Length: 125
Image (cartoon, rainbow, N blue to C red):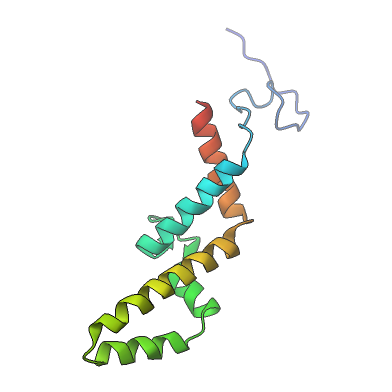
């Protein structure tokens, strides 16, 4: 069986040069929204994205760079106080605040676009 030699045209969509290259599925806004939600949930649950391997998003670094540090003093005071029920609403507000900050910060990034492409390709198959 004779194999075709590449034509060396340089086009990445050339079936002769790249016979295993599949066309990528079209990414929709829903794919992007799902990807952003997946990334933010993983960061909030595990402190990083991706969970394994080299992190592209690190929660510790993100909070250090983007959040006012006065929250730490409030949490320390709440922990040291005898009224532990005061701490729960503050934690929930802080969780929601960081989650929204992550969503707005990473909304139009390559990380989201790459994961959205994976989601679109997986749904096409």
